[in-house]
Image (cartoon, rainbow, N blue to C red; front, side, top):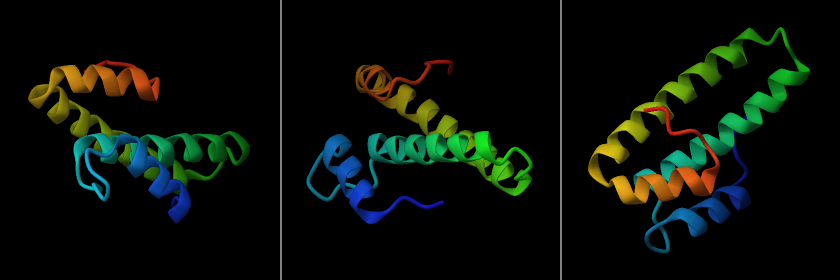
Length: 91
């Protein structure tokens, strides 16, 4: 359930600080959010796919840890990213 390279490049261009920025917190959170939404749609169809459900929970935990770090280091950019991605700020 990996993202295709075109979608990944689009997300990196939109949320990256520079042209080829793939390691910043903003980009990582945006990529994880896209993968989470894809897996959520998959699990709506295939309700008994427990292996994918476990992967989804791991991705959500990883995104949560990244968001916690990003909020601690740059709160203004964090709030802008949460609003742009339309996710909840529950950290």
